[in-house]
Amino acid sequence: MRKNYFAKRDVCIVAYGETKLDRVSGKTVYELAAAVAAELFKRTGLKPADIDGLALSTPFSETSNPFYSTFMSDYLGLSPRWSQISDIGGASATGNVARATLALQNGVCDVAMLIGADAPNTRNRVDYGGYRGEFWLPTGLQGPPGAFGLLMNRYAKDHTLDYRGLGALAVAQRKGAVRNPLAYERFRQEITIEDYLNSRLVSTPLRLLDSVMYCDGANGVLMMTTEVAKRRGLEKRIYPIAYAELTNFKAAEQTPDILETGFSVVGPEVLAMAGMTTADIQQFHPYDDFLFAVMLQLEQIGFCKRGEGSQFLRDTDLSPTGRLPINTGGGQIGAGQPGLAGGGLNLVEAVRQLMGEAGERQVPNPRNAMVTGIGVIPYGRNWCSSSAMILTN
Amino acid sequence: MAETPARKPLPRPLPTPCHTTKPFWEAARKGKLALQYDPLAKRYQFWPRPISVVTGQQNLEWRIVSGLGRVYSYTITHVPTAGFEGKTPYIVALIELDEGVRMIANMINVRPEGMNIGMRVKVDFEKLSDEINFFAFEPTE
Image (tube, rainbow over all chains, first blue to last red; front, side):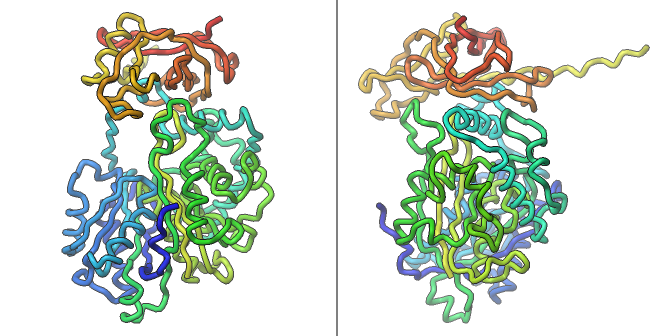
């Protein structure tokens, strides 16, 4: 097990910010990010001159710019001594919290701004190249939904995949979106399990309501050392207490079990680091590009047994007052996915909950949360990057 | 009655061979499936890379393989990608070759109802251009 460099709680999150999710907003990433930055400044009383660290995630809408973080810091009036850009997809948000922690702990910077912003509906500059253009695109595999169709069919061969369980998760997350004023407005209505079961097939057995939809949006957090936060009188402090990340699980294996994900490693590892079991996790904010991805995480992190994920989803109250609150603001499937800033949506909801600011969807007596991240789909497997973080107040 | 000219469908995207993959596409042009073989690790690797993922050496060889394998998983595509408009529903499978690698490929000469995980398949090639034959698989029966 790796060293847990969060054990001392000497670094904390002191503020969060988030824009409303919208489709084809016509906004640029800089406009979306600036709205989040302004929220962070307003909340903490800080100004651009106070920020000396900046961490971003690569966005679909600006991948053509190799100097994206430099442009962003310029737009925001920052002169960072530490700049970080993470390209591990949805794992970038928690990944940046971890990377900022190292920088803060070592005095490379004193106040770090972490932002995810993306406008994939308004402008999408992605061209993966490499093996994807050569060996994947010519086959017509329907992107991530097609890849997940392959996963789900393989799972269904050896296990019971109860679609009503996935439907129960879809229903629960939409309920969260209804209670989330920042969710994409069109999603702010409840659905039924029948709506899920009857939604349009994309790539069997995956349906439209199995997956996220791109929106434009941004989110972010502000981090500093606990000592500086106390000195500045910032009383609401959220501490990351454990983190683990793994990219390209079993990269060298040619015929692995494609259902075995990096979470089979980082899930148990992050719990062991925190001295906890899944029974101690009060609320779960998993990266939810697909309902099936949430189900696999539940199994492989250990919230339920392998092969019993869909049953667990059917049997468990996933609401804010239930046995295991999941993605209380709707998650990305319920609220919308702000492109590659999506991982920050799950993270910010966890922070909001732990600060007791979740309003009508507040988990009572919040004390800890697990947040996960997933990054990009590889050739013929599940996903490349898996990250898991435990936070506490 | 006026005829509406059909919108010309986009062609299937073509792979862009690179230095490493040239032998793969040369074999495909001849109707053969070639894979990289690691002489030290004594195993094949796919997709083709400029380095062995086991030894880290750049001594990979190309070998013509049987083209035989089994369906590890499959999916029926209903929402087409670029170049596949008008072809739905079409089958995309993850094939596990007898040589111990996996390939994403179309299934041809089989209907969606005829698919099952574990069925035996063999490679075939579809001509996409003068330079590119692209692999696909069909049932062995």
